[in-house]
Image (cartoon, rainbow, N blue to C red; front, side):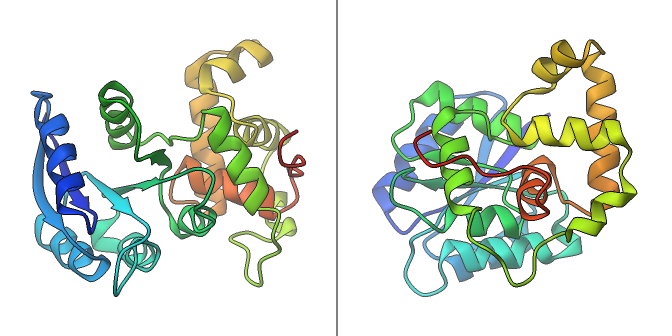
Length: 225
């Protein structure tokens, strides 16, 4: 099955570069390109892509507002947003994850990393494993939110094992890593993750990680630690 991708970036040259890389993979195709957030939302509604590669910093409607719009629409529930940014500077990444983005990549990633990231997100997983990604999420999710995705009491709906698996996922561990740690199968871990997502109304694994921090289940580590 071909993965359908929409590119959203205000730099035409960068969009052209990403298009070439993506369409070099026989299992992917670019269905549309957007130069700003408003156009990204409109084209996503029109084409229903599997993955939107979304730049945060765009004129007019930015990528954060566009991500919030896309991820809030029931008719786009199957579309995943993958944020393109620079790890060190873009403090809006955490907001995008809260809004429902499934992860993020640096704009300077190599072709293999980009294509793997798209495949990962299209498969319903989150792109949260690199050390730089965990550090950034930890740093910016430490900021208190007026309306967290799930209050601490929301965790009462989870079993002890679901809370344990959720916490390990929030520390950046993959299903395989968690399975090895708990001496269970990766399929069992996936089932615990899915049940926790359902109970907490998290859109995907990335948003479940946000909930883990916002609810206090996991405490952010000091940045750089």
